[in-house]
Structure formats: C-alpha cells, structure tokens
Image (cartoon, rainbow, N blue to C red; front, side):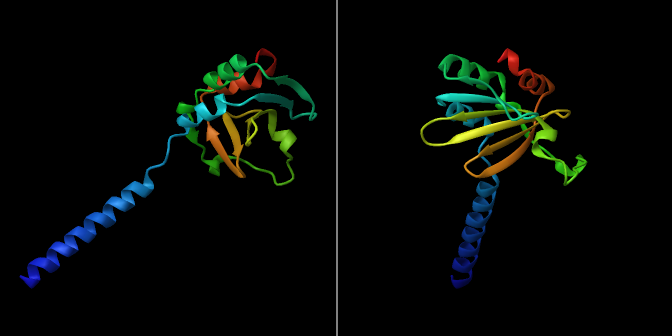
Length: 146
C-alpha cells in the first residue's frame, strides 16, 4: 500500500510539473495586441532620416486601417544573428519611419528598417524585432500613403 501511494504521488507530481512547463512555454500571440493598438487615440509618423514629424493622425478609422494593414498576426520574432550591425550606426540611419500610437495610458512605437523586412516594436519599456511580410514593410515605408 505504501509503495502504491508513493508511486501515485510521484505520478501526480510529474503530471503537475510537465503541465506547468508546457503552460509556461505557451506565449500569447502578438496578433491579439492589435485590438489594444486600435484603441489608440493618436498616431504620429516620424521621418527618422531627419527627425521631423510628418503627420499626426487622430482619426479612429485611419488608425484602425493602419493597424489592420500591419497584419500583426503574421509577424515572427526576428533572428538578429544575420544582421550586420555597426555599433556606430545610429537609429536614424537604420530606420526610415517610426509610427507612434498613443492613448492616455501608454504608447507603442513601430520603426521599419530601410532595407530589411524587419520592424522594431517598443511598448512599456520593452523592445522587440519582428520579421514582417514584405508587403507590410513596403506599406510602412510609404508613409505618404498612410
């Protein structure tokens, strides 16, 4: 009986351990974050080559259309190992446009690389690089059409 209870306890603890490990590895899809971005009240478009604000958009429909055109659910975490980063290269030289979406609580920004289909996303003090589809990168590089 003692051996049976010990083995049952071991099996139950193993199940709990493996379940918790598999649950911790599941990450929330970034695609669900698009609803948060759609609630933004203002979007600024900044030309990173000179630092000038090109546009300020406060129209809710245009902000929603912008977020929809990003197709965030298709983004993948970018592998930086193939980038040739020069430490002296500045933010303005790597990116062409930055989009800042903000509301009363916080702001998020997207900066698109000039020559790669990669977007740098910053929100709540965290920074991530995502590989995006080519059509999304070209859409973000054409700030005049937004």
